[in-house]
Image (cartoon, rainbow, N blue to C red; front, side):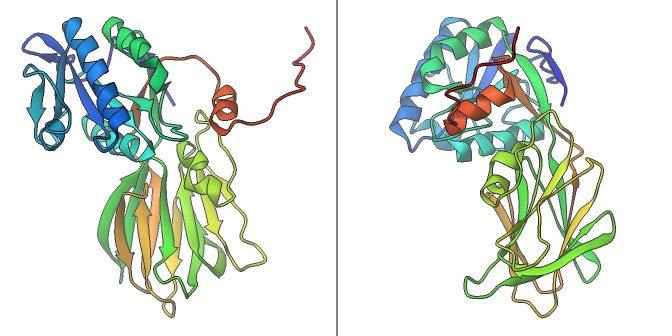
Length: 314
């Protein structure tokens, strides 16, 4: 994980659009709270001379002034912007991460959902969000991603990526998926179960957490492999080196499986398919407003009981 100041966003032209600072706004248009929040953020940015872009497909659901630029959902949608502001729950934040990775533009998430570990602010912080964007009062943090390959019969048939996890899962509820797991070209264990999650530290609080994996602090560089409901004597969560290569082989006699990346993109895995997961070549850049420790974020997000803590002696 690396950080930099908000004034050096790393965009190709410094975030200018005809000499104007520009922000790309992404919101969950199906939520009235997100639509209202988007209106407030846009009004605040425009008042301070910062241009705003939104997706054409969502513009009709977001009552925006004519000065807001509507753009198609292509790789050029974010080009020239200094920041991506995302308003919504985990699904919307993951959609924003797709734009952030493709463009290299930092993403600032405002959580309007339940947990939102990728978010930096809550719905009550909108005024603060606008102020920090206007003053460039944020830092940029890089988060590790995953590069994912699917091979069948020795040929690569699918490429993908994830910021949270790549999960290999059974496709049929009534049958277990038989797999062999591998780390750095050496087999680890064969078992039947619901599947395997391969995750980043960022994803350790997502699906991997639900599957019983450890919580890993974001600044730790590592990869996780977490079995899902495995029927085996040894099917423990593994934490490996960041340059390790993880693999999950779907056994020939098992029913077809499915691979999901961040729960958003999927591909069918025929019997005999092999999924390889390694550290991603391209990180996702997140804008940070707070210097609070991940420990405090963890306690707040999960409402962990800490009553009785007295702190270290001074």
